[in-house]
Length: 139
Image 1 (spheres, rainbow, N blue to C red):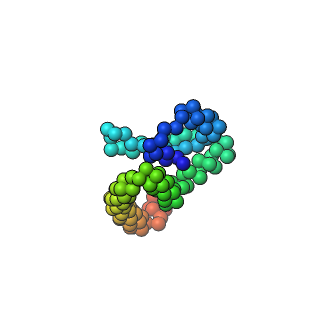
Image 2: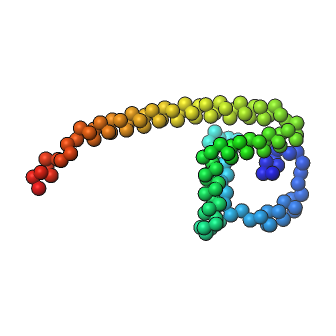
Image 3: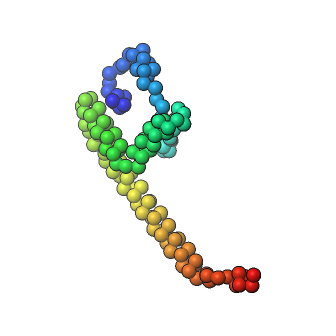
């Protein structure tokens, strides 16, 4: 389970190192935040550009744009927190996610409205242009 960091158990460093050697990571997308910043950071890793690797990276990227990975991630976090009896932390996390999603939805809605308005203006300007410009007739 990738979210073992919620568990209070310590894993032997040597065992973890051996596991990592067995399973080589060929593609990854990692999001993280720093204590001193409000920014979300992103690390992208791809081992090579072979078809298999690119296909696996595409699988990650396609999942990011769906709820599938979000739901799986939240379920894993919930399980980990339940094991440590920190259920209230999960409730707090869900509330925060919902608030941030609502804020981002409002921002996306405003951007969409602006883009539609701009597209309408550009379409109107294009319609107002003559099909054949006078300079083209002279040639």
